[in-house]
Image 1 (cartoon, rainbow, N blue to C red):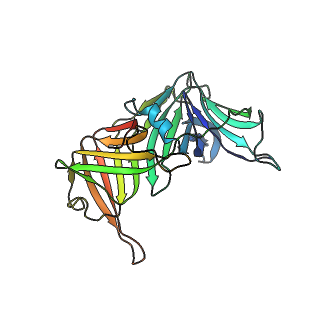
Image 2 (image 1 turned 90 degrees about the vertical axis):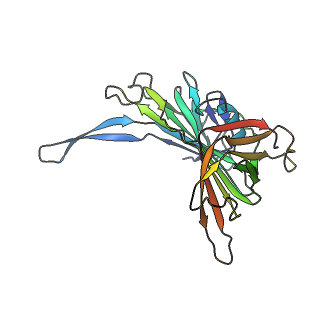
Image 3 (image 1 turned 180 degrees about the vertical axis):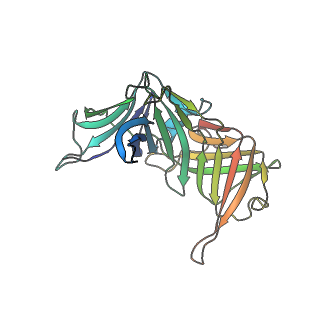
Length: 299
């Protein structure tokens, strides 16, 4: 009798720290065989699309790992993708030694799907992994109840920074931002061959359409974008690095993160509140190409 909690994951060369959630799904389909009278005659195991997903505050680690890839991804071939859970200890905190559960695969593809930051909280990143089989028959992941865990560490965390949007050559800095969501638009598609159970290839499915969703309390910041469309010259959205035992790293120090569009189109929607709340406008900006830059100064 035991319970467990999520732990640091291994995604190829990246160790994903500060995991807040993790899931593994097999996405299996049962094949039915019916008798002549329409009743079930037998059941068979059909195709399985094995996936894993995470939510983590290790935004900087992921940004560094994927920034140079187009589209954003981490490809693992004959390596390690490991999702461990730390076993709790009766009358204590967590067990030591090789007593933990882990799901591990050697071949797969990981993509960041969303970066998000709300109010004065820490930024998070959502990722998804798809596993592939070596031959379409071999199970692409294995399970262990005797896994050992490396020591856990804390990487840098980030909060909302300034967001600047340029329309008609005129830059505008939002002064009252409530939240930011950056969706990469990158999705994966498994390729099954000859009726085999597991995918032998994982591909990125085009097109990937990135969107920045900027939530703020400034009504009328981009006039005309509710009923019409705003042609956007550029967007720069920063995440400001927190300073341990302090507040934030200085803006002129190149340790922050930046998400940017060069060309985009935007629209807006407004959610009203009663007298005890504040109305909020959401600017959804869709860009041609999203750039992620780590270790930058805030201009």
